[in-house]
Image (cartoon, rainbow, N blue to C red; front, side, top):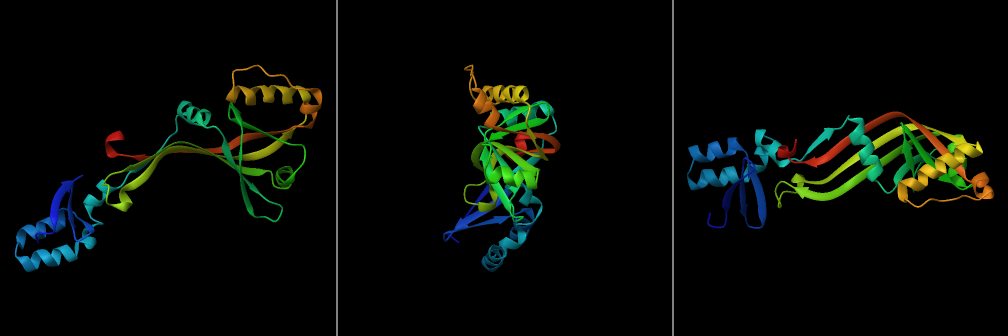
Length: 219
């Protein structure tokens, strides 16, 4: 088997040859050591995919953890330039749209024009799901094993109901928060602009947060 090379990576024996990559866990290696004849080695090489689900398989996969610390969760939210708002449209179908936001004390604030399809949707179906995601980096445990690849990132998913704010002073307060999310410049708002803007207030009823694409050494 001059065209097959065995290497040890992440606790697994990797054989590479003839344009293919296979994985042996320790069970496969044990059988190779017991039956070192040419025929036995060839047989084990052909069966190598059967061993991929063994104990060593865990070394191939990136890890996902749940984040519960409120400070970390808020840090993730504030790092995001926008959020994805999942809405139910007038026909009952899912509809997702990116929107600018502000966040304070468990409440997400969004804004839109006074009319339009989004306003009609949340008026009829106020329940929404809002997703934040930051830090996108392609990572892997073995560069030639597809299932070892992952996207290193952190996400927050929030659920709640949209309440449309009508009070003018509250609108100005929320507009200030929205602007501070994106700029340190002080901004002013014309009376007609405040009157016409729709401010969405979403009190978070349920929140989950996860970190993806972690190596075991990062846990």
